[in-house]
Image 1: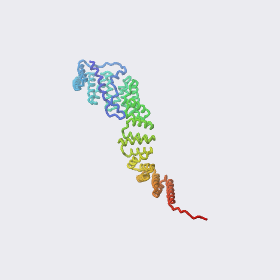
Image 2: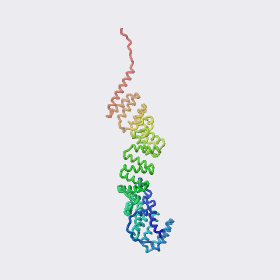
Image 3: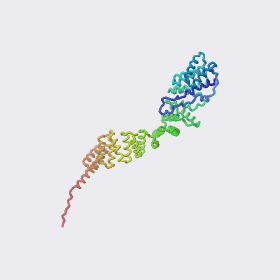
Image 4: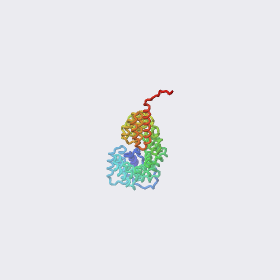
Length: 450
């Protein structure tokens, strides 16, 4: 007899297994395990109600229920189903007996992933409300909510969970989390937030570390509400209790949302130092952050290592960042090779212009002239007039005075370069005149006046 009556709590223990599996959002992928504990345990917290007289299992069916229970314990589902089918065919079953048959059948269907069938059986029990105890009835509401949740029918899950919730005097943390999760999945973030906060706080008050999935859910709610200031401490708890790279990168992203680039850079640098950054996008992000923090040399070293190891592809974007870092670090000689690669891949002349400037810094005038010519030919420059003046300079240094003047004259076609171009033309003419004068034969008068 006792064993049969204990089977009423079997619904909870069987029906909570893996109820939260299924397609969840990336932000709460950690919620693969159920948030709800056994509703049977939660019954202890129910408010005291007036007792009502309910039906009981009659003597003639007790042995059959005991055999069904034994088959369940032995996981002999076939035998349990045979006994249940035989019992269900009895024409005079009372309400509680029908409820227990539905209870067992619901569990069997749930174990076979027949969730619609399980719901159908469990709902038969709610239709027998007057024949079952308040505890049993409320427990089934709880189970139905979880089965609906496993089907991702969050509206129905929320409806049944809230019905169950109303009759709990002091709902456990898991109950708040179930309500909060359902509301989150329905995109009711403002409604979800206080339930999730309450659930976590009740858990903390018991001296327990908040579950990873719960903190993930709270973090996701704050993200959806764009409340990054409150999201940050939740991420810090995740890093503290469940240290994972994903939480570190998410925290860095939050610092970016808060316009705290210095801390974002520090986070990426710390992950890099611990060899946690292994993706091209992560490496490029770190290098870009270092450039924006005026640390081009570090950025160049990060990119060099990534390109040499193959983590970063040898493409325009990466060569551009690498060469830019070297150029800003005044490592002009080292900047030449990656800059030339990037310039060839680019569809405009901007990088060729930068390459020409690097050659000028190295006094490599012929190389500079070639690069600047390529820059002008590719076009789409920010300041074509200034590039022409640089081209004229390279020719002047090679003593190509007429070609130099030709470049300066072209530069006069751009308003911002007119003054500088005129000055250069005058300077070239003066130099040509000076050199011509130096070449003239010097005649020395040796006549002496008496």
